[in-house]
Image (cartoon, rainbow, N blue to C red; front, side, top):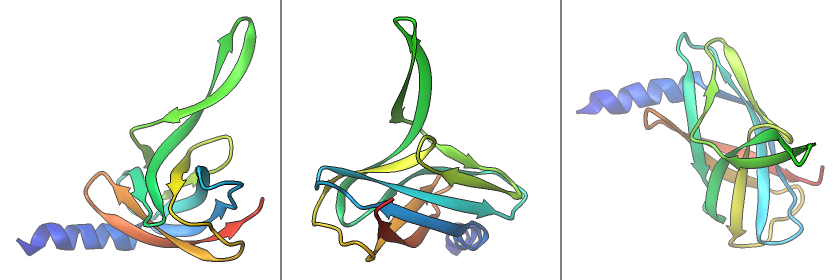
Length: 135
């Protein structure tokens, strides 16, 4: 029974946070988190999303471009996963994949570090601390 736990623990040690930050929010309604994950392993890892004790809901979003009425428009929508390639990196950034955090439970302070728990397809969770920045 300890085997699945040990496998999850091994994966958590493989995937690494390279850097990241949370956008200083203008309101308690919504903010976003951006980060870079590194996978030194031989298999791809699927990031499904995250949890944060300080937000009611967290969603993994992707940005898209589509033609509408003869114009190219950009938008974002929830996605099921983002892949961290083997021996590679996944970059969550403005204009690309990112984490949307909805209905903040408290005001965030510039410079404070907040915890997110990243969730992977195999059940592994990785806790990360990200600074709140106004970029």
